[in-house]
Each structure stands twice: as C-alpha cells, then as structure tokens.
Amino acid sequence: MEKNMGSLDRTIRVIVGLLLISLVFVGPQTAWGWIGVVPLITAALGNCPAYTLLGIKTCRK
Image (cartoon, rainbow, N blue to C red; front, side, top):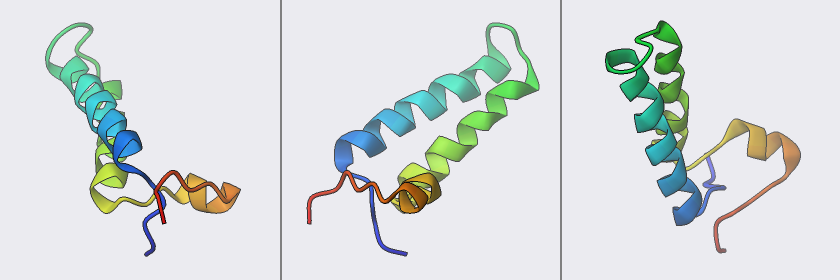
C-alpha cells in the first residue's frame, strides 16, 4: 500500500482516535468510542482507503 497521508494528517488522526477511545472509559462510557480505533489504524498504516477512492494525497512526494 502506498502512503497517502502526511505527518500532520496522521498526527490529527492519532489525537482524534485517542480522544474517541477515551470516551469508553470516561464521559458517557458508551461503546461508540471504540470507533476511534479506525483513525489510529489508518494513521499507523499511513494509508486512508477513503483518500484512495477520492484521489487525495496529503503527503509530500
């Protein structure tokens, strides 16, 4: 898989993912917070399937 996300995009996804996962333990404590795993995985891989479909690249190449 080719990387299509830049470092700023990846950083924002990690922060958003961690915030969503924290909702499982604090706040409303619902299972919806586990959706934060998705941005964490895409940030770790450096590839977003939605970006691929839309032809978007935020990385410098």
